[in-house]
Length: 158
Image 1: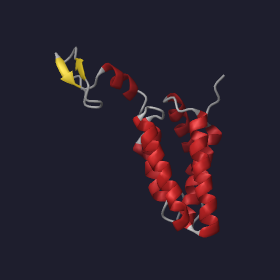
Image 2: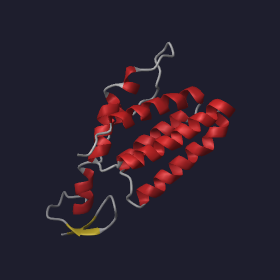
Image 3: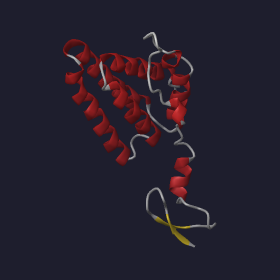
């Protein structure tokens, strides 16, 4: 039976009536899972100290998901470098001068996603955290520390 893929819109031959995705999108969806509980809403506790999850456990889990989804360490480091640039600018001039770098980062990620260069789970992670990071200098610092931890835990290919 012919069906239209709910993800990409391509027509495909479905072997079962409950199939919703073409074979290509179905195989990709097996990996592109980033649980919503892995997305932090704040980097700080009530006293203003960094949460443990910024540095330990959660970054390692996220790094492994990105690795399984074929995110290259170079792609992660490129984004890390942009966030570092924004953080430095925010510390010197203020967050209002760093926001355009964060907006450019989101724009570039959308373009890379459209070209299938980065996985969807990475873009989802970044979009969520970029919104938090643009609030103020402290939030941007928290996001940078979290992203830095993910870079540190990223598996090395052997």
